[in-house]
Image (cartoon, rainbow, N blue to C red; front, side, top):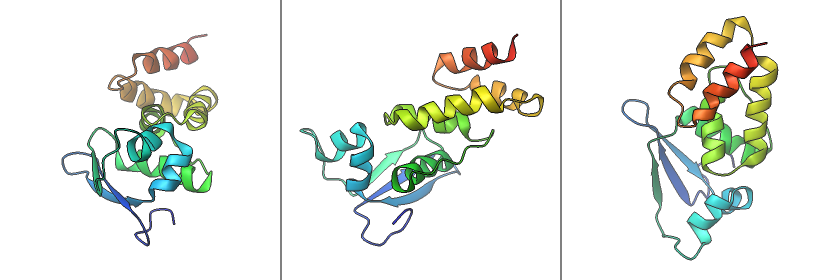
Length: 138
Protein backbone atom coordinates (compact mmCIF):
# COMPACT_ATOMS: atom_id res chain seq x y z
CA UNK A 1 0.00 0.00 0.00
CA UNK A 2 2.90 2.37 0.66
CA UNK A 3 3.35 4.86 -2.21
CA UNK A 4 0.84 2.88 -4.30
CA UNK A 5 -2.06 4.34 -6.26
CA UNK A 6 -4.19 1.24 -5.67
CA UNK A 7 -7.20 2.29 -3.56
CA UNK A 8 -5.50 5.57 -2.58
CA UNK A 9 -8.09 8.13 -1.52
CA UNK A 10 -5.80 11.15 -1.17
CA UNK A 11 -2.89 12.56 -3.14
CA UNK A 12 -0.27 14.95 -1.84
CA UNK A 13 1.45 17.43 -4.14
CA UNK A 14 4.72 17.71 -2.24
CA UNK A 15 7.59 20.14 -2.75
CA UNK A 16 8.05 23.38 -4.59
CA UNK A 17 9.54 24.66 -7.83
CA UNK A 18 11.21 21.91 -9.85
CA UNK A 19 11.13 19.39 -7.02
CA UNK A 20 7.38 18.58 -6.97
CA UNK A 21 6.10 15.03 -6.60
CA UNK A 22 2.58 13.60 -6.45
CA UNK A 23 2.36 11.01 -3.68
CA UNK A 24 -0.70 8.76 -3.24
CA UNK A 25 -1.84 7.73 0.24
CA UNK A 26 -4.69 6.30 2.27
CA UNK A 27 -6.43 8.59 4.74
CA UNK A 28 -7.13 5.89 7.29
CA UNK A 29 -3.49 4.79 7.53
CA UNK A 30 -2.28 8.37 7.96
CA UNK A 31 -5.00 9.25 10.48
CA UNK A 32 -4.11 6.30 12.71
CA UNK A 33 -0.50 7.48 12.96
CA UNK A 34 -0.90 11.25 13.23
CA UNK A 35 -3.38 13.43 15.08
CA UNK A 36 -2.81 16.15 12.47
CA UNK A 37 -3.86 13.84 9.65
CA UNK A 38 -6.81 12.65 11.75
CA UNK A 39 -8.03 16.22 12.22
CA UNK A 40 -7.36 17.00 8.56
CA UNK A 41 -9.41 14.07 7.28
CA UNK A 42 -11.98 13.25 9.99
CA UNK A 43 -12.12 16.23 12.36
CA UNK A 44 -14.88 18.80 12.65
CA UNK A 45 -13.32 21.09 10.04
CA UNK A 46 -12.30 18.31 7.65
CA UNK A 47 -12.50 19.11 3.97
CA UNK A 48 -13.26 16.56 1.31
CA UNK A 49 -10.30 17.30 -0.96
CA UNK A 50 -8.71 14.69 -3.20
CA UNK A 51 -5.39 16.56 -3.42
CA UNK A 52 -3.47 18.45 -0.77
CA UNK A 53 -0.56 20.74 -1.59
CA UNK A 54 2.43 20.58 0.74
CA UNK A 55 4.95 23.07 -0.70
CA UNK A 56 7.04 23.44 2.47
CA UNK A 57 8.14 19.79 2.66
CA UNK A 58 10.75 17.95 0.58
CA UNK A 59 9.29 14.93 -1.27
CA UNK A 60 11.94 12.58 0.15
CA UNK A 61 11.16 13.60 3.72
CA UNK A 62 7.42 13.16 3.13
CA UNK A 63 8.06 9.67 1.76
CA UNK A 64 10.16 8.89 4.85
CA UNK A 65 7.20 9.95 7.02
CA UNK A 66 4.78 7.81 5.01
CA UNK A 67 7.12 4.80 5.09
CA UNK A 68 7.21 5.10 8.87
CA UNK A 69 3.40 5.37 9.12
CA UNK A 70 2.80 2.46 6.73
CA UNK A 71 5.69 0.11 7.52
CA UNK A 72 7.09 1.24 10.89
CA UNK A 73 10.50 1.62 9.21
CA UNK A 74 12.83 4.57 9.58
CA UNK A 75 15.66 5.19 7.13
CA UNK A 76 17.64 8.29 8.03
CA UNK A 77 20.72 9.71 6.37
CA UNK A 78 22.64 12.93 6.96
CA UNK A 79 21.10 14.52 3.88
CA UNK A 80 17.46 13.86 4.88
CA UNK A 81 17.39 13.87 8.67
CA UNK A 82 16.63 17.59 9.16
CA UNK A 83 13.86 17.63 6.54
CA UNK A 84 12.42 14.48 8.12
CA UNK A 85 12.58 16.07 11.57
CA UNK A 86 10.63 19.04 10.20
CA UNK A 87 7.90 16.87 8.68
CA UNK A 88 7.70 14.67 11.81
CA UNK A 89 7.11 17.75 13.96
CA UNK A 90 4.69 19.30 11.46
CA UNK A 91 2.44 16.23 11.49
CA UNK A 92 3.08 15.41 15.18
CA UNK A 93 4.71 12.01 14.84
CA UNK A 94 6.80 11.98 18.05
CA UNK A 95 8.55 8.62 17.61
CA UNK A 96 9.90 9.64 14.20
CA UNK A 97 10.98 13.04 15.56
CA UNK A 98 12.81 11.32 18.45
CA UNK A 99 14.51 8.99 15.97
CA UNK A 100 15.73 12.02 14.02
CA UNK A 101 17.12 13.69 17.15
CA UNK A 102 18.73 10.41 18.20
CA UNK A 103 20.31 10.11 14.75
CA UNK A 104 21.71 13.62 15.08
CA UNK A 105 23.10 12.87 18.54
CA UNK A 106 24.69 9.53 17.64
CA UNK A 107 25.63 9.77 13.97
CA UNK A 108 27.26 13.16 13.76
CA UNK A 109 30.73 12.90 12.22
CA UNK A 110 33.30 15.33 10.94
CA UNK A 111 32.18 14.40 7.42
CA UNK A 112 28.52 15.28 7.85
CA UNK A 113 28.75 18.02 10.49
CA UNK A 114 29.18 20.85 7.98
CA UNK A 115 26.32 19.56 5.82
CA UNK A 116 23.99 19.34 8.82
CA UNK A 117 24.98 22.74 10.19
CA UNK A 118 24.44 24.42 6.83
CA UNK A 119 21.04 22.74 6.45
CA UNK A 120 20.04 23.67 10.00
CA UNK A 121 20.45 27.36 9.19
CA UNK A 122 17.42 27.06 6.91
CA UNK A 123 15.38 25.01 9.34
CA UNK A 124 12.19 26.63 10.60
CA UNK A 125 12.95 25.20 14.04
CA UNK A 126 15.52 27.52 15.57
CA UNK A 127 16.49 24.91 18.15
CA UNK A 128 17.81 22.56 15.43
CA UNK A 129 20.93 24.69 14.99
CA UNK A 130 21.37 24.88 18.76
CA UNK A 131 21.01 21.11 19.08
CA UNK A 132 23.68 20.50 16.45
CA UNK A 133 25.96 23.12 17.97
CA UNK A 134 25.63 21.57 21.44
CA UNK A 135 26.51 18.14 20.04
CA UNK A 136 29.60 19.53 18.31
CA UNK A 137 30.96 21.44 21.30
CA UNK A 138 32.58 19.43 24.11
